[in-house]
Image 1 (spheres, rainbow, N blue to C red):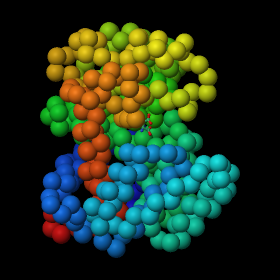
Image 2 (image 1 turned 45 degrees about the horizontal axis):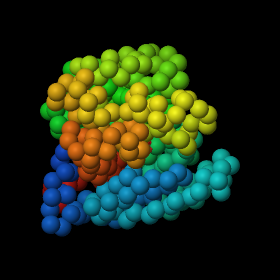
Image 3 (image 1 turned 60 degrees about the vertical axis):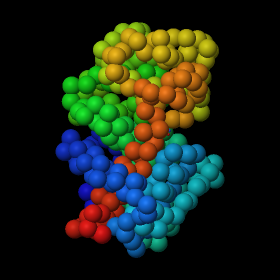
Image 4 (image 1 turned 120 degrees about the horizontal axis):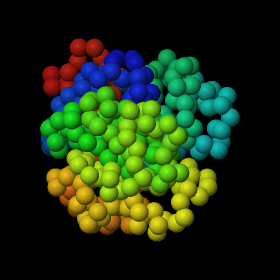
Length: 311
Ligand code: ASP
């Protein structure tokens, strides 16, 4: 994958996803060392180009790059000052002229990482674009499920919430389906995209039905910044109908795990208890995000022939 863009899960083949997950498992050991650093990307430069706020993803890419000894530059631009597409591409080209080995892009508009990739020499990694894709989130979710359940093939994954506006849902639908899981989605009818079943998922408007037989329950954040209109009567009603707590989780399999990409609106998508305690694996998702991004940076921005173990 050296020098290749990662713009979404949709274009990936199953064996590429498996390679990324296997590489991430090898990277996990580095976080347990006293000195959490290997020289794999020494002399490589990574640019974080974030046009939208991010806690987890930006920090995680920064830590991942630093653990591999890359030089990491954070360029946080307000989307308002760079809202014209020309100045956006000019900015990207300017950064590209400094010869980075990868550029990681987050933008509120779907398709911007692709536009930037079209004009850049450096490979582009999509860190979330509008309601389109968030491939690294889906990959860390797949890694987390694989490590919890020791397989993905044949599992039932229930994704609940604002499916229409969620790049996390879209990337996970592609990813888990490619790995042979059955993916179901549920939410208020206004939050289910038209023709969602064409993506190969089953859609439900009842929490109880979507949970029946689920191995993994993934709750999504209500994304007020992308709603632009009322899609449900009130947060209280949303929480009563689609919010998860221990009582409602009983409809799922007894060993079901609960996931959330964060940030959680506590008491809306998940009860406080389910946010903090097993079977919730939210902090494992965050932890796995670092190893997963190390794997991607190594695969995309590394030198051919270098292995983290050997260095
Ligand atoms: N952090 C995820 C994202 O950037 C999920 C969310 O914000 O709801 O898409």
